[in-house]
Every structure is written in C-alpha cells, then in structure tokens.
Image 1 (cartoon, rainbow, N blue to C red):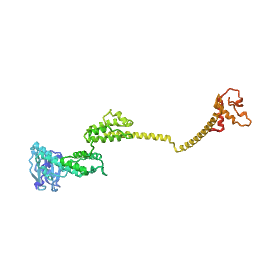
Image 2: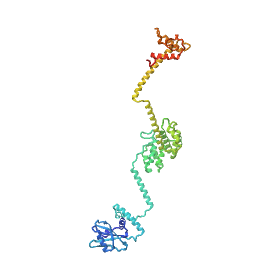
Image 3: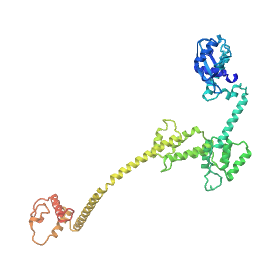
Image 4: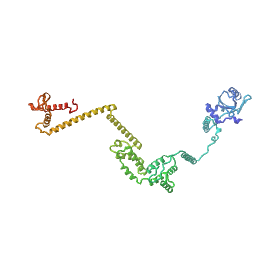
Length: 473
C-alpha cells in the first residue's frame, strides 16, 4: 500500500516548481482522505511533529482516485526537522510523509532534476506520466557515428524512392527515328528539345530518368540506346541523349552552326519576336553541341539581333541604340520587351487608321447630303464641259476662215457672229461694236480706238445669257 501511495521524486519536484515553492520547505502527505479538511491536517501535524506553522498549498489524487496527496509548505527548513515516515491517528488513519533533501544533491543531479522537471511538465500537458514511457528513463546507449550516418542515408534513399513511386508523371512523346516522320511523332530537333527540358526538371534519380526515356523510344532509336547500354552499363541518361544526337541529330558541328547563326537575318514582313525565336533555337542547338557556354547566349543573341534585324524595324532600331548602354537581357526579358513594343506600335497604327477612316467616311445622314451635293456638282461640270466643247467647235470653224493681221481669233469670231446675224432690220439698241465694245453701232461703223478687253467681256456675257454655259438665266 505504501508503494502505491508514494509519489515519485521527479513528480514532487515538478509540483514544487509549479507552485513556486522551495524543495527544502516542502512536505508531502499521502494516503489522505478526500474529505479531510486542512484544519485537521494542521492539528495532527502540530500534535505529532510540532513543526510549527505550515500551509497546505495543493492536493492531488493518487492512482486509486480515492485518496490524495497534500503539498505542505513549512515555515522552517525540512532538513532541520526529524520527520517520521508515518503519522496520523485513530480518526484520520495512517498518513505517509515524503521530503526532498536537496542539500545532498550534486550540481550534476540538479541539472538532471531540471531536465526531469521539464520532461514531467511536458508529459502532464499531454496527459501522460513517466510510467507510460519507461524506455525514456533508461540511459541511451552509445551508438557508432558511422552506423548512424548509414541509417540516415538509408532512410533518405527509401524516402526518395517512395516519393518517386507516389508522384505521377506524364509520359514522354514517342520517337522512333524513322524517316519520314510517322504520324503522331515529332521531328528529332523538336522531340529532343522537349525531352531534354523535361528530364532535367524531373526530381528523380538517374535510373528513373533512363527508364522513362527508354519507355518512349521505338524502332531504330530504341536500338541505339540498347547498343549504348551494352557498351557502357554505367551510362547515364545524358549518355543516352548523346547517342541519339549522334544518330539522328544534325551533322553540322558547332562551328558550322555558328556560321549558320551569323548568316541568319530577319525576313521582310517577319516580326522581330519571331526572328528572336529562330535565333534562340539555333543557340540551343549549339549549346547541345557544346559549341558555346550558357553564360554567352545572351551576348551572342543580342549581337546577331543588332546585325541581322531589318533596318526598317522600329523595335530593332531602338535595340541598336540602347544595347551598348546596359548588359544584354535574358531571353525572357528580351521577348517581353520586344512583344510589348510590337503591341504598342500595332495599337498606334490601328488608332491612326481609325482616325483616317472617320475623317474620310462621314456619318450616315451627312453622307446622303454630300452625295446629293456631289451629284449637283457633277451635273454642273457636265454642262460646263458641253459649253466648252461648243466654244471649241466655234473657234475651230473660225480658224478655217481668212485671218486678219491684228487679232485673227477675235476677228474670226466676230465674222462668224456677223454672218449669223438675222436678215431682219438690226436694232442698234441691242448690238455692240466688236472693235471698241460700246453699244449702238457695228464694227464697220466704228471710228474709235480698239478695246479688246471690253469686247471680250461683252462676248462672254453674251454667251452666258444665251445658255451656252451653266448658270444661264
């Protein structure tokens, strides 16, 4: 019974830390009934022990849940008292006492007590005790460092393998190497670009990458990889790709590809962004051939854009002006900048076209009005043209008659007008002189000086009033 109702030293220490009381002033009573009041405890301790003033700080139930442990704080140090193991009386029964003698604890034991206190506090929060984890109280065995490293490596390997099995992946596109390319397959250059990128991005071991690469190969391509594996059992997936490159890739070496790259120019009507894409594909081909370093790609790309772009391309013109002022941008930065410029130029051109169309094409109501106005103008022009034709005919007929020395055209016109004068008596009030331009007499009767300007004005007025020109009344 005594063993059942005893509290572990570590539990007492944790209890004292929780209540912020010194261990040298703590007395634990066990086997106390739950209905026993504090005053009865004080009276029994005073009568039996004579320890003087004390205080009951807290109570806890034991494992039986019928009896309790009582935490008492004394006024004096427990080490100065003589505490029996059992106390009590006929009315209260037998109580057991526990004290913690800290004076004899070494510094090492104090650190252990602190660790035990922290451990017990954590277990109490989790609803556990030291009895639930007996294995932790035993001293840890000394393990070999190499053994620990080997176990850690094995755990990481198993974790990676299990992760690779769990993560799903999309199969690579098939490739056989037949010429012409069968339906459903890509040409080698397109296939190898995509496959290389995917294999480099996959977070898995080299063996898994080789397995996935072999899965997508057919026909001659599968034979090439099988031959490579036979000749080199430790080959990596990069070695497989190199063997495929030797069999199906371009026969041009790095220097040939560089010459081809330097001879690639922007075509008429080709956007600068499309030209940059063509250049970048050639750069990646040279990179696979190990003809250039990855760090030199941006510099080579910008150099060729400056050399090979059309001189009429506005975006390329701006790049030529600014490329020496800063370091060459990456492919993504360059494409973003070029496409934004191209979109801006396209929107500006569209806006100008819309403005021109809106100026040339009026509204619907105004269009009908302008159409009517245009029809009237056309008719007016037609009448003027007919009048001019008649006048030209008159002048042509007059040119066939004898020409006078002074002004042949004017005298021919006057002669024609006189020849067509009616035979009825002339009303001189309605005639004018073709020499001086005054009214009331004829040319043959004129004795005044010649005034061709006035005669010309009178002739024009006469022609308009006769209806030969538009606007005749």
